[in-house]
Length: 204
Ligand SMILES: Cc1ncc(C[n+]2csc(CCOP(=O)(O)OP(=O)(O)O)c2C)c(N)n1
Image (cartoon, rainbow, N blue to C red):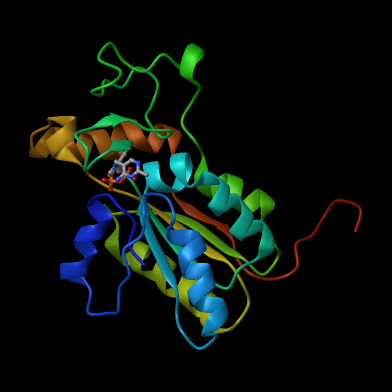
């Protein structure tokens, strides 16, 4: 299931059945398909604009309902396909097409912490992680665990991948990796946030 955005290029990259949705509507559409076909492995693949802006309510509701789907969300800190507008993940002072003087966090808020939000609202059987394209081995492991969690029938699984967008960042090769590994890592912590199993609470 591919959202509108650069993620739709997945058509050409993955040898799986795909459906294209309206921007931000990948989660409800794959939820419907999965509910009607319990044996399917349902993946909603989208950008940060699709998942945290126009489709945020779907993400929240699907995570709360513990839908048996896997959401893969690519965080490149802006709207890639449409030319680099500010997204919920845009960092303070980051320049984009719609924040040419840098994002003013006092007026527009600070970057959305997607996996942290999903971890907070999802059930004990959810899987939640944030990986990075700078560490493909780890990212692959997280995606595998997310898919295994769905296949085991446990519930919702969510992986955010920190990714590059040199075209809109207007960075050369060196600065592209610096932007990811220095700037983005300051705001977005890589690692697993929730692995299935009962959570221990204070006093229990
Ligand atoms: C309902 C709707 N609103 C707006 C658009 C225009 N649009 C297409 S892609 C996009 C942004 C994509 O950004 P993101 O979801 O972050 O994905 P990326 O391209 O960065 O991977 C927008 C606003 C649209 N196609 N449909």
